[in-house]
Structures are given as C-alpha cells and as structure tokens.
Amino acid sequence: MGLTVERPATRERLAGLDGLRGLAALFVVLHHCWLLSFPGFPVDDAPWWTGWLLYGHFAVVVFIVLSGFSLAVSPARDNWRLGGIPTFFNRRAWRILPPYWAALLFSLVIAWTVIPQPGQQAPTGQSVLIYGLLLQDVFGSPSPNGALWSIAVEAQLYLVFPLMLLVVRKMGAAVMLGAVTLIVVAVGALAPVVPAVDLLMRLTPQFAALFAMGAVCAGIVNARERTSRLAWHWFAAAAAVPVLLLIVVAGPEWVIENFFWVDLAVGPAAGLLLTGVATGKPGWLVRLLDTRPLRRLGSFSYSLYLIHSPIVVMVNRLVVAPHVPQGMPAFLLTLALAVPASVGAAWLFATVFESPFQRHRSWEGLRDAVRARFR
Image 1 (cartoon, rainbow, N blue to C red):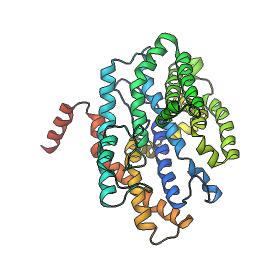
Image 2: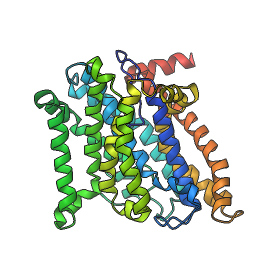
Image 3: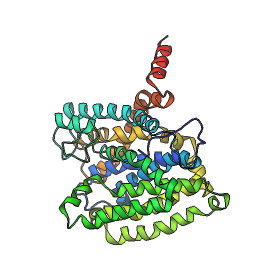
Image 4: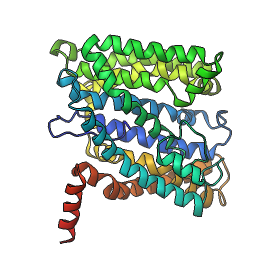
C-alpha cells in the first residue's frame, strides 16, 4: 500500500514521507489496541481524551492517498509516462506479494492454532483461496487478519493506475481527478436506491478518488518553482478544519456510518499535507518526520501493518484479558505489551520477507544474494 516504499534508483527521496508511513502504521496498531480494550464500537465509551483512537480507518485513507502520490512522483517527472505497464505490474507484484503472502500464512497459523480474529470463525479453505488471490473485498469469508482487507483494494487500484496516467497525459490532471471523483460520487449517491450499484460499495470505491488525488498532488511537487513554493501545509489545514469540526459535532456513530463521504472529505487535506511535506513545508514537521527513528519505522511500516493484528489480539485476549478488567487498565497494559511486540516482530519480519525484495529486483538477484550470504 502507501506503506510500501518505492525507491527506483533514479528517484530522489522525498524527506518526511517515510516518517508519515511509520506514524500512520503505528496509529493503526494503537487503534486496534483501543478497540479490543473498549468494546462496543462504534459507540465510544472510552475516556474522551482517547476518542481519537477510534478513527484508525483514516490512517488507511492516508495510506491510499500516499500510495497514489508515491507511485506518481516518478511518472510526473517524465511527462506522466509510466515506463512500461508490464514492468510496473511486475515491480508492484514483486514489492507487495511476498510480504503479503508470508503475513497471510502467519495469520492463518495463528488463527488455526492459537486464536482467531475477534468476531470471526477460524479461517477456512475458502479464506485461503480468497485472501491468497486478493479478492477479500469481493467475496466474504472468515478473516485471518483484520488488517488485510485494504491490501486487496490497493492491488485493484494498481490495475487502473496506468489508465489514470494516460488520462492525465492526454487530457490533464484536473480532468482525470474530476472524472474519477464524479464516477465515485455517482456510485455513492445511487447505492442506497440501486441494489446493483450497492454491490460496488464492497470495493470501497471512494479509495479510487483518494488514490487519484494523491497522484495529482504528486504533479505539484514537480511543478514550477513558484507553484511548489506555495504554502501547501496551510491549504491542508484549511481543508482539514471543516472535516475535523464535522467529526467532532456529528460523533463517531454518524461518521462511521458515513465513512464513504467523510473519506472523500478527508482526501484533499491528506493530499495537500503530502504536497506540503514533499516540498519541505512546514520545516519543523519535515525535520521531525525525517528523524532517524521515524524513517526507520517507515521503512518497515508495510510489515507492521501486515502482521500486527494477530499479535495485538493474542496479547489482549490471552495475556491481558484474563488478569485485567476491560477499559483503561486493559488498554494501558495492551499498549505496553502489544506495541513493542508488534514493532519488534515487524522489524524481524521485514528483514526476511520485505527488505530482500526491495534490494533485489529479480529471483536471480535474490538467489545470488542468498548463495553469497551462505558462502
């Protein structure tokens, strides 16, 4: 997803983006610790100062915008040319599938032998097939890992990314973003009254508009100096304030019931924030996001996102719940145990299943590196 880091040899690293990935992935971990400690979602019966942890879904919104942004930076520097569709698909598959399949296997083993995900039966053979083929947003089956749903959405967005770039190249970024958003809004408006259209809501179609928003914002980074020097972080703040007020006033039950529309409202703020960070504004935030710990966390954020859920569930249900009452005591102990366990396990997981596929771009290169290592 936006958690995966694409680093072609010719691409200059944009300071701050890895840090954003790391913080967003960590926020999802905290969100799941909160959910398991304060049951009743979407009702918020936790202390008011922890209420923001209910909205872990918005971290996925940031990931989707960031994914479109990251993938579009290099094409935007080359007149929106992708450099070959087969090459793009091969690179994306090489980047996301090995860690994903390894995480799926890890999750299945935990669900079968230790504890399944809350509210889910033990995964079936159908689960293995559906999740293995990244079709979990199309077909229902017992989930081995509550975080894997969004990986299927992102994989499907990769399929339309070349078409998005083609429209940008031929007709302009505004036309592409407007067309995608118009289609998505039409789906959202018709879904309540047209059953056939309602079926498309399983695919979270609003993420297509968010992905397109990220791609368009990547073009701003490569625009003329006068454009890139604008105060994009203040534009982001201006876009975020109305959405934050809506979330506070409407409350969690309404927001969660209307994620489709709220996600679309969050998208511009997320895209403008990424533009600001990528153009070095505000400086204090970019410096913070580019500190070594956050860069390091961002480097294995994909692995953290993939494997944290079974770990958090094991810690909360098997270690914390038998000894500590639900609520704040359970939440604090779950945080203290599950967060470092998840981060440490993700680092080890990334070392084996993610980093090698970033350093070596083919089976031949990976095989030669393994042989050299053993020699």
